[in-house]
Amino acid sequence: TSRFHVVTKVYELAQPFSFFLTKVAGIADKYNSTLALDIKDILSADMGNLVASCQFNYMFDIPWLVQQYPKEFRSKPLLIVHGEQGPSKTTLEAEAIDYSNVRFCQAKLEMLFGTHHTKMMLLQYDTGMRVVIHTSNLIKQDWHQKTQGIWISPLFPKMAKPSATEGDSTTHFKRNLLEYLSAYKAYQLKDWINNISEHDMSTARVVIIGSVPGRHTGDQMKSWGHMKLKRVLQQHGPSNGVVKNWPVIGQFSSIGSMGANKEAWLCGEWLQSLSAATGGTTLSSVPLLKLVFPTKDNVRCSLEGFPAGGSIPYSINVAKKQMFLHDFFHQWRSEGQGRSRAMPHIKTYLRPSPDNQKTAWFLVTSANLSKAAWGALEKKGTQLMIRSYEIGVLFLPKFFGGKDLFDVSSNFEMLKSSTDVFPLPFDLPLTDYIKGKDRPWMWDIPYMDLPDTNGNIWCPG
Ligand SMILES: O=C(O)c1cnc2c(C(=O)O)cccc2c1O
Image (cartoon, rainbow, N blue to C red):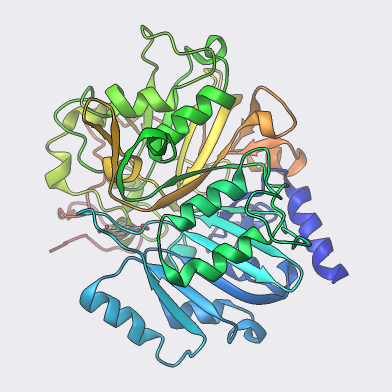
């Protein structure tokens, strides 16, 4: 067992945040070293001697997934938590016909247009368990040439006696994880819920920000979505005096319908939560909002070419109703991490300093820019309506050595040499869209004027 202790140490040494990007095929090796992981690294025996696992996700290729486990783990119990219904559920279950160790749990989706976006691994070893929260579907292409994010927990040891309240961290990680899993009300998750209560998760330093479908009222309203993030930032975030002139950055790979103007939800509701701080926010200063979303040419010139856009499902029918949104957009650029051509499927949100050297917090999550994911207030702000399952982890300086701010950089050389600089997935300052030239990527219109990396054009439909 000394072997994986060493490896665990290496991961934790790489950086205290345990925040990694996925390896990208076709870029220089140096960009795929200690700060990047492949799914095989996560499932490796170096991380622990697997006994059972549970995979929450949106898209699955079961035969491919089983192959990503070391062969000695491929017949261990594997529970798949998905949101498929009817025929697509039957198809998914048929994929596992040859794997008697694979079981399924269908997450209930009672809100129209809701999806099961959550991407999480529960990994039970003989000596404890790990939780992995990430942004990749369980299909080969999501781990090949995209920019994706991964948080890996420390190894959580088993406790002498089970307890749902003991063995928690200052960030209430265990309680929040149990609340999230209980919200499924799924009998197939009972054993995993019991399992988690048997583990000591006091070393977890991130805060869980989850979404579950429903119309949440009372205390529940602040347990999910943007209202959870708001409450956490008000309690444990930066002081308003420090951040009041700092921008909020949102970076995502899909966009929902925002309504008629920015006041409807984006700035009137969502930004109010993301700009929350301790010491109350002065109403007058609506903070600067900057959004990162790939241009058509970012996609065209990417490693995958136009097909990368198959995972960036922004529809022209949604885009044309919200041209106001595109004024906030900036290009995808990640020169420091060698990933300018690895299109983002990662979703991240942060509050960087104007000089781009610091951030007050950082969130990596499955949640795109949509009301379905983050929630929309209803009934004069007395209930939060959420359609989808989402989960993410929030990094707050307070829980990483009691600091006020994180130093940040996307520069690989800088990150390699210093352990407590937060590794950004993209470059700051952001890169504007070129006026009169750049358009946001939209996946359901043709592009036939210029060839992509592979010499192809794009003709959807
Ligand atoms: O990772 C995800 O949760 C996710 C969800 N949805 C889609 C869609 C769609 O919803 O049509 C199209 C293409 C890719 C994705 C995707 O990657």
